[in-house]
Image 1 (cartoon, rainbow, N blue to C red):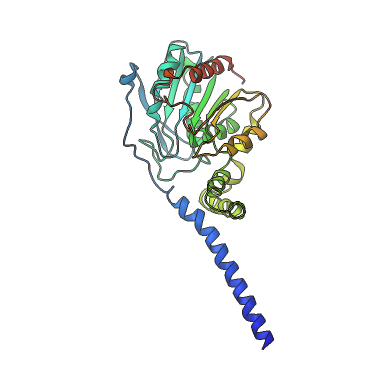
Image 2 (spheres, rainbow, N blue to C red):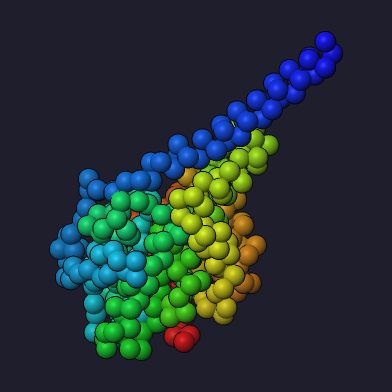
Length: 307
């Protein structure tokens, strides 16, 4: 009788463990299922609204996707800045306000909609694991254009675009500088940081390896090697500016702190109080935020060609 009860108890425990593991796998799987999509923006902006002329063009990535981009050129550019937006919004055309600012300082701007966004091809958002290849295709375009022969290349990203920007500079030696706004340190980190806001921290900690597992199943081996907190270690002496707000409700400040722990000591920072995911409340018209624009322009001015 006692042996039977013991077997039943063991069976219950094993069943509970299996159900628990199943639930832990199911949570990131269900959440990440929403990434199997193409983002079509309800709101976009035109260069003409900012008194700019922009060329719309496409580049092809190494893995065969056509990526949509807009280019605002200047004569003898002092730098060329590649701009990337976020996971769901806004359209990268929100950067036309920045392009206007950059043109006034004789910087060229290229804005690309990452794969699965806007007019770019793709039906899966890849959380920066593959989007750095989109940046690589743009860098190739820049390198083939005589206009940019002596101009440093700077990658400038927001949110998931910032995580992609960090991955890109880590993987692409031809990028000379980085501006990151509200980047996550890794997908697992931001997933579990946000989870811990509504569940016990121990549950979020236990969940992390299962997030890694599901990420591996979706994106392959790149999910282990290509992540911002690892890629930022590859900066070398190239300049970088990391920006974050202390109460960011989308990508908690912990990600910023982790990135700094892995970053070279020369990396510059810009921190704002409150929940300002876009860093400036005037992202469409950045010149309205003097402190923000002064920091951006001061940083770009010091970037030099490192290759």
